[in-house]
Length: 300
Image 1 (cartoon, rainbow, N blue to C red):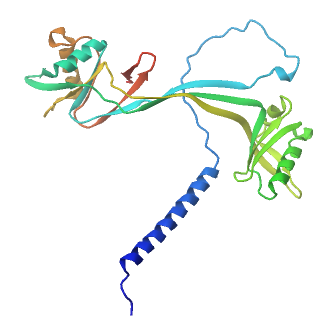
Image 2 (cartoon, one colour):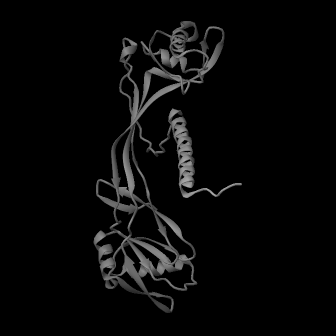
Image 3 (tube, helix red, strand yellow):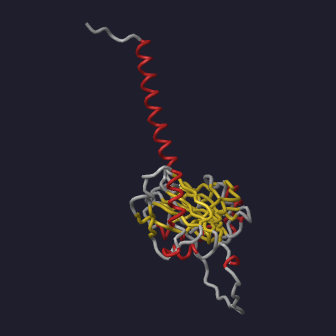
């Protein structure tokens, strides 16, 4: 005969199940930490500029060649969901926008109909600004796809020996950093030029006790983030307009009516930069930060 479980037994079973679930999550986290971090790309439009070289220098030795380095300033755009029946208007002058908000209610004429609109500030979510510094080493290379058939110390020795073979484009190895879990390594050569020779090909022969493997080679890039800033705020030149009701006209015509109304100083407005409506369906507006000026502007 089976008896129903007591409350104590039920609690014990729940604790056991919770512990089991936690162990599974911990195992997943440990496996995730062992994976190599993925590379990232920063998309940046760089303007074309003519550069005039006035002289050419020939270094006496390879030691005068330096690493390749670059840095990027990255600032995230802030999303703002413009709901159905709302509009955004950006003025050229911050003071005009603030006066429009202080006034609050605005009677705007659309065709033969007058409509009461409310002017409000545009609160934005949190954004990030950071500097990404990258450096491509002239003496280091990354190696991937290393077979997991030897103990860590032996494989480190085999890597040093294989990459020192001059007949394969290698040279004297200064240091080997090998990670047995990720099956990846960073090889540091004593002299410049060796890394460039090896990187002319995407594969390189790795000799073990009994076999020869073609491992993947790639440039070694060091990446770090500096000057991380978290910012949020309100776009001081942009105003949110609400209160649109049952408008059948095209959004372009409505935007033109809003533009004309708020362009007039007699209506409390001023020079208008842009107007955007979302009368038929929600839309996403993007704002970007000008950290030097301490303001947020609409990224059209």
